[in-house]
Image 1: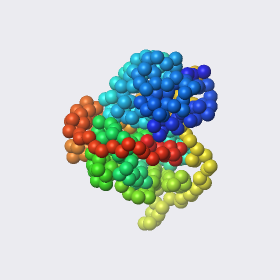
Image 2: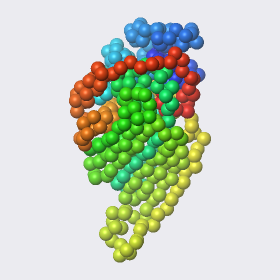
Image 3: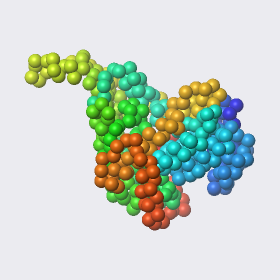
Image 4: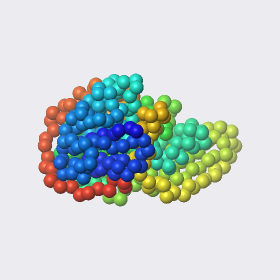
Length: 382
C-alpha cells in the first residue's frame, strides 16, 4: 500500500482528495494533507494535517506526495520531496520555466518515480487518436492545427489569488495555466517542432501582466507545419484539433472524432495522376462520443503512478515530458519577447533571465477575499 501525501487543497487539490479518499486508486491510501488554510484542512481531521507543506514532506509517514500547490511552488516543493527520497506526482505544469524543471529532474534518484498530471493523455478520445497515428493510418504528418479559444475567463477569475496570471506565480498566462494539456497532446501525438514563431498579446482582454491571447506557428523537422491559437478572451470560443497526414486527416471538435483515410498517399498520387483535378479516394469514419469521454481521467494517471512504484509500470506521463511543454511554452513567450523565430531545444537560461527581469518589474494587484467554487471534474485548468 502506497502511503500518499497531498499538498494543496484548492480546486484541483480537492478533486484529488475526493477520488483518493473514495478509494478510486487501488493500492494507495491518502494519509496526510497540507494547505495554508486551516479551514480547508478541517474536513480532513482523520488524516495528518499540516499548514506547512515542508513539514509534511519532512515529517509525514508517507511514500509519495502529490503536489497540487500554485505553480511557483512546484520546483521548491518538488525538490524537497525528491531530496527526501519520496516518489513525486506533480500537477501541471512541471515548473514555471524549463530551467527549474530540469533542476527537479536532476534531483530525482534512479529508484524514484516522478510523474506528471498530464491527465488528457488518459482521455479515451486522445488515446484513440494516438493509436491511429502510431499505427501509421494517416501517414506522415503534414500539418497540425489547434484552435483553443474556449478558455474564456472573466476578470474575477484572475482576482481570486495573488499568484494567478503573474510572471512570479505562473511564468505566464493562457500558455502556462489553461493550455499545458493541449500543448502536451500536440507533441505527444506529433513530436516536437524544430522552430517556433509566436505572437503573444499580454493583458489584451484582462487587467493582467501575462498573455491572454496567443497565435503561434511551428515548423517540424520533416517540413510539416503547425499552428496554435489560444485565448481566454473569447466567449464560447472554439476547440478544434486538425491533424493532416499524407494518408489521412483527423478532426476532433467538441468530443466528436472524425478520421478520413485516403486510398493512397497524396504525395504519390500527386505525381502519378493525369487528372487535372484528381484526388485520392477518401473514406471517412465518425466515432460517436462515448459516455466515458467526460469521466475523470485524474485517477487513471494516479493509478498508473502508483503501479509505477509498486510494479514498475511505464508512466503515461513521465515528468521528463514536462520539459517538452516548458520548451514549447517558453519558446512562444521568448519568441514574442524578442520578436524572432526560436530554435528548439530552448536556451533555458536565457528564458529564465528574461522571466526574472519581468518578475522584478511586476506590480502587486488587487485580490478578492473569496472565490466561487469550481467543479474541477469539468475543467482541465485550475
